[in-house]
Length: 124
Ligand SMILES: [Zn+2]
Image 1 (cartoon, rainbow, N blue to C red):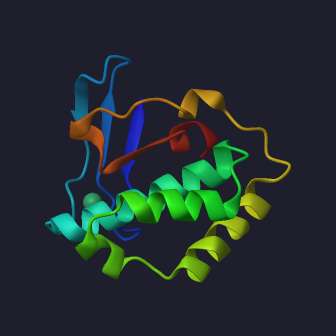
Image 2 (cartoon, rainbow, N blue to C red):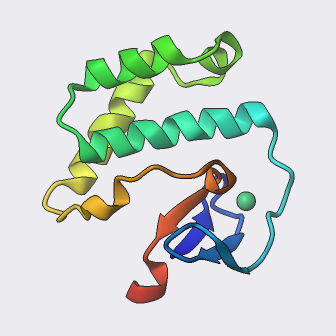
């Protein structure tokens, strides 16, 4: 499986694992040392995107549940309730009409948390 760093679009860190998430090959490394708060914030934003794309939960429900589970420093760093709701609606418009690959809905092991699974190698 092919993974790409999703922390920053300018970061081109990639790795390849087998189906058991064993590291097979390491591409480029991260272009910076991510700070933990930023990583957690991006992780939550990523979760929001996934839930927007993969579930039929209401926008308000997703925003409320993400915000109510976030620690105080993260909450301050997150966009406003309204901005998050807009993100979800944008994501849903983007996904509409796209056939969702349900293999994307899986548990990401901790050592791969900053990577997003991608099919880039097949579509390019
Ligand atoms: Zn990176």
